Amino acid sequence: MNKLMTFIRKQQFLLTIKKIRQSAPLEYRVVDNIVIVTQVHKAALDMYLAAVKSFMYYFAKGTIKALSDGSLSEADKQLLKRHVPGIQIVEMSDINTEGFPTGGCWERLLYITELAKDAYVIQLDSDTLTIGPVPEIDNAVLNQQGFCIGNPVWPETVSANYMSRMASRWHSDHIQAQSEQAFIKIPFFESGRKYLRGCAAFSGFPKGQIGRETLLEFSSQMEAKLGSEKWRMWGTEQVASNVMVAQTSKPRVLPWPRYQNFDIPHSEQPFERQAVIHFIGTNRYNRGVYSNRVRHLIKILAATKNQFIPD
Image 1 (tube, rainbow, N blue to C red):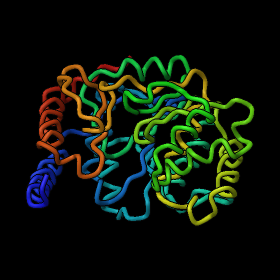
Image 2 (image 1 turned 180 degrees about the vertical axis):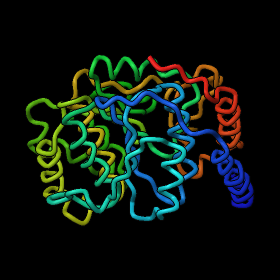
Image 3 (image 1 turned 90 degrees about the vertical axis):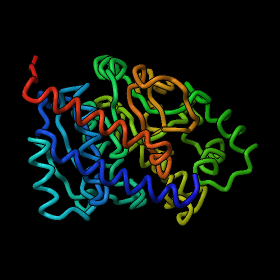
């Protein structure tokens, strides 16, 4: 897609996504033992509303928390509270990051490890959209299994040894690949711990199965091996998130393409068979798909206004 077309579709998308504010407040059943958490930036406010409203339309229960990155104004927070009754807004600056990198969503992962002491935590990126039923997620919560979104190339857990061998063949300077190369060189994996090569955009963390201590063990060893500057780059949090999910009970990469990073790789599966799409980066403007699905979501929300039936 050329730059002009990207610009045009971006402007069309921004006009479309703003219409989510015309939809009715979210209705869902509040439960304490399931938490849906998202780090929210001011520029992604409307995308977040579409993400959480679409997910909760098909999931319909939990406690909703937004981790503000500091960019949200008081008016932004009031908007969230009107559209998502009961939402709890936490400031990223309040997260204890001692011993860890900061920025790059590390505060979010640290917050998740705290929440997962008492609840099943679902991490939902603001640039995701749920477009169909999510029985796999309901079952994961019910069975206390971890999950992440991914692609068909890496559908299940792998050993650190295998991941390191493969990553070393790519000769990539991307921090994820460089981190994966280092797995074989740190003690963390010596006991046979596994790895999931997925994406942190949509992931599940069962209650009581991950903790700050495990995350600190992994992060400290990686920082010692790669150096502080490199380990604090954007992308290391995703590696750490994948590692944490992989340490949970019977973790899985969600079935592709029902759960997918849009156009990574491209799928011809009809939307009627898909569940959650992560519209990552400029891919979200490809072919106007994201805009069209948001329009469809708004129609669904309008048609079901005040029809929520609690358990």
